[in-house]
Amino acid sequence: MSAAAALSVSTGEAPKPRPLVLIRDVSKQFANGTIAVRDVNLDLARGEFVSLLGPSGCGKSTLLRMISGLGEPSRGTIEWPTSPHDAEGHASPDLGFVFQEPTLMPWATALKNVMLPLTLKGTSKRDAEAQAATMLNLVGLKGFETSYPRELSGGMKMRVSIARALVTKPAILLMDEPFAALDEITRHKLNDDLLKLWWEQRFTAVFVTHSVFESVYLSQRIVVMAARPGRVMADLTVDAPHPRDDMFRTSAQYADLCRVASQNLKKAIAG
Amino acid sequence: MSDITVPVHVPHDGTDAEARPIFTEERRILGIARSTWPGVLAPIVIGILALGFWEWIVHYRGIPHYVLPGPWLIAKTLVADWGTLSGSLWITLRITFAALIAAITVGVALAIIFTQSKWLEMSLFPYAVILQVTPVVSIAPLIIIWVGDINLSLLICAWIVAFFPILSNTIMGLNSADHNLINLFQLYKANRWQALRYLRLPAALPYFLGGLKISGGLALIGAVVAEFVAGSGGNASGLAYRILESGYQLRIPRMFAALIMISVTGIAIFLLTSWISHIFLRKWHESAIKREN
Image 1: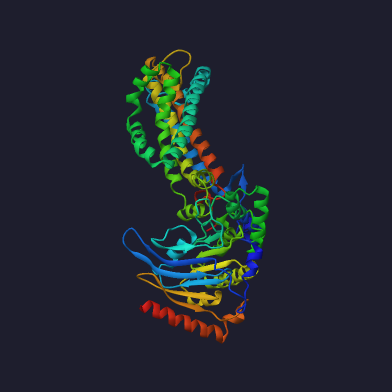
Image 2: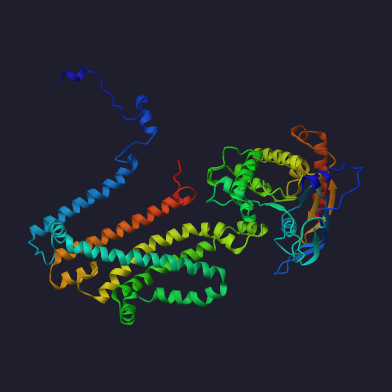
């Protein structure tokens, strides 16, 4: 896994490795007739940080859920050329998912919550505990192993949720507006910590957001989407090096990039 | 009177600095928090006043004890007849708890089966409702005729009354798991057993415990009502039969004594189920959390 991840740290000149996810002509129509997503074509490269940016109702969450396998496309295919497949030929990629809410089990401690994916996979209790403790430490929650969710703040709960998503060392981390409910100070801190985790662990990150600033700060690439029907309007490259920090947040380059992204979003909203 | 010249002494009433620490940590008196004491004492005072009034009115109006015995006579009867009454109490308790355990087992098992198969739920749930809404008094004679064994009949009657709250609450609880958590379990390809063990059962626990609190009281009521209907005599009779018997023999003080024992049993069952609920939920459930503000 780590070897494959290391491959993806390709700079411009190296030959492009095969994409992790191929989204081909994907449409999603709900039972009530609403077309949530229409004709989306996207490739997600290994190790890249992509934001799906758009107004509410543009199908960005629906698209994310289809990538995760929680919803089937009505038309089109989502392929995982390099990921393991089960006996029936369905892709079963290692993925982590972070919901808009922390979505923790209130009856379980932080450690038990992070252990869940490992427990479900049948990892032994001792290994699961050790890995979950390491992960909690990585998200900055050392010492809170035995705390119950109700004893944690909103930001800390989100950290537990991220630790749970990353504890299986997934190839891809899917995030559905994870920080939307947090205050700005907490959100900035979590953005920084998420970038650090991504920089160290090199998973592919797909981040759904409606915030221009958040998408520019985090991503290497922004996919701008429009609503009714949900479709891709622009695919922007955020041409600024990682690792990024507060210096970047206040730089002229950041302001320029935000302006470009804003203009694209405005165009997308106007249709 | 010379004290008048001395400046008025301010007692340490908790408002000055010296006394403050006492109030930062709540003092416990006989193991009960200071602020809880009024809630304990007020009903006791009312109870004593009411009993005093009762005793007084019985003597003052000369009410015969076969109409209304005074509390003191009831207490004496309770002590004097303890041998018979405690035997009956034991029988009633046995039926009540056996019925409650059966209600828990069948209620939870059925709830799990129903939530695994919509078809089974659709086909069987209406009959559970019919069982619940039919007054147990009206089916008890039938059950007694069919079953034959009187203790088993009583057990079945008490079970019928007690099991529905557990069934319906547990079904609701099993279906109340957070939708996103269910999605998460799907993402990690959890099987049914894992989803039940790690998600649905813990999510159902508060609902089940709520049902248990209701069913505990209902099991006792069911046991008493069924015994009233059965009206069985002999040595192996519960408290309900003691009440009937005392009524026939106009031993009203003994009737009251048996009645009090049933009430106390009901209260004890309620406290026990509340305590069990508290033990299971105190760490995480909103209902068991005391907030500072």
